[in-house]
Amino acid sequence: TLLNKSKQWSISQHILNNIQTEAFPWLYKNMCAKQPVVVHRVEELPDEAEKEKSEFEAENIKSIIMVPLTCAGKLKGFVGLDAVKNEIHWSDDVLMLLNQVAESIASAVDLIQTSEILEKYRETNNVIKRMSRSLILTLTAEGIITESSESCSSMLGCRPDDIIGQPIEMFLFQRDIDPLYTKLGDVLAGREVRNFSCTLQFREGVLVPVLINASQVKTNDKSPVTIILIVDPQLPFRDRMDSQRSDRDSVLGCTTSY
Image 1 (cartoon, rainbow, N blue to C red):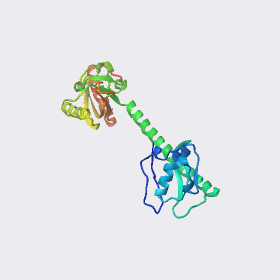
Image 2: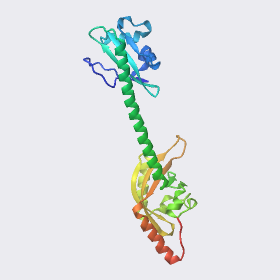
Image 3: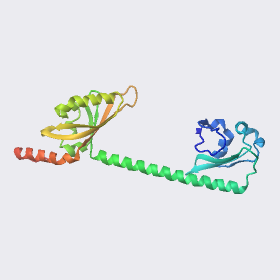
Image 4: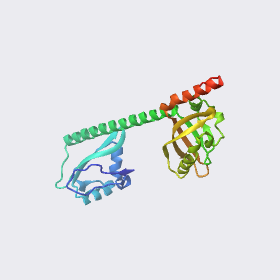
């Protein structure tokens, strides 16, 4: 665990950052126990606070007071005052006010963290909604489809079993084959592919303009590389898909459900 002074108002330019908690064991022990540290005279610190005393003296600190800053019962930091000109006998009122400051800061930090959690939840929820209407494919490094989401059946009128084991190029519009394999090469090199536009050509001649996002998954050095594709059919083109099916069905005298 590292200690940092995130905010400091002082005539001193001495700032401690990235300090291991082991450097100040007595101070850290008290903070973890949610106990304030009230030092009227640094010279009178106990022997177990030898490291802290040495640091305080190096900073010309004569008196110091610190209180823990906790959020949801967990130590998040501390707030303190120190005197560098004269020794100060810290009163109970000072301790009370410092505790109130720490509680106010902790409440603000807790509110910010809660807001961040809610925002991440919203983002995750949006991703889930997006994936629920997306075609999820996994490929080998050679571009062979190994898994397909169930959603492909309803969106594209194609069973997952018809896709698995086939090379991805079988479902690409001819002009997009080489560009997509170039993008897959980028994925194998460790780069993500975002919003690559191409056209899938599924059976029965249905053309589907899509955006593809791709990334690589490798659980360990010996496991095979897996490429995950999230394929988003462009919703404005859905009417065109319906039109293509309607034209085909009128010739074949059949209907297709999806």
